[in-house]
Image (cartoon, rainbow, N blue to C red):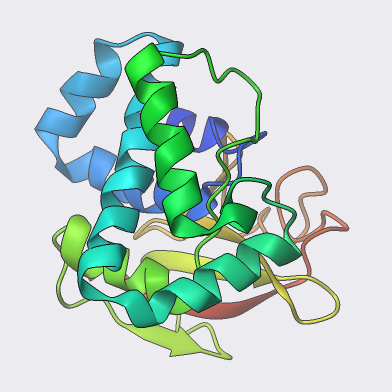
Length: 201
């Protein structure tokens, strides 16, 4: 399975921060790669939901100051479960995992990430403690790009590899096509500019 498939699950499900980070890990983590290869689509989606839950439990235990920002961003992006707060999300997600529900194209379990939350996820959960957040700029290089809309509001995250290729919604775009691609790149009317960057070096 090519690495870009991980970002495919974000096409209809708002967990782009998570899939962007995992697209990076896919190329370097043999265990992750083997788990993805050996699972069905439903199993991969449930594993992604467990990943979201793991991070939210970490935040609840150790970084509670991030919770208001996470909840506010998800309310802006119409996440029904995050409107119930982290506890409400975790309760519903736990029931879903235990019941092995079929997520399919549902966005019920959306968990949009603030820049600070995504940086923490990469540092602690993904095991890259040197990850650094740069705001209001794109310093270049390998990392996760925070994409803003025309109102300068954070709306999406995408992964950029060391060669400058950008992974989004199951597609890979070269440095030349990413700025103009109308389907998955900055040519898409919902995406306007890079507003922040989480380094992965």
